[in-house]
Length: 113
Length: 112
Image (cartoon, rainbow over all chains, first blue to last red):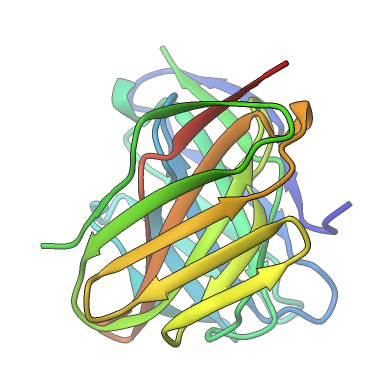
């Protein structure tokens, strides 16, 4: 058990809606990264949060936004959902932003219809 | 641009050794990771290299050559449970911090 938990596990949304995904990081970890993984592909980096501040961002539009809270848990928000946003969303936590090992949660499977 | 290449699929026999290669073209290199991902599950960390050379961890070893933009993951004494996707990932310095770029993964099939 990695200690990283994500909720919900599955979600169905309609195009144009907004969604919030949640992640609780492993105890003692202050860095959280979010990834989008399409079927048969590697995870694509969305952004990383370190001590409540965004610490790096991938090539995702501004409608993908996030937060990290004082307890280092995190949220991923996606506005104006598109069909192509359907994917597995993974959260990973690590001991610090230069950490050598990241622990992934089981992911949230988002389906946009 | 940033790019990571690894073979799409490999097949190997139980008990054998397999080497999964990864080449990358990135700027701001800050470390290379290997992850294992079974179908329907989250990736799990296998290894990390930031300096050139070989890192050994039980049945798994990972090698890095920064000058060649090349890494490999070596799996020894293959077991059926090693059938999974193996993801090569490179961390790079990004504006404001870091980002991690993943390859598409190599699906390994271990046969009896």
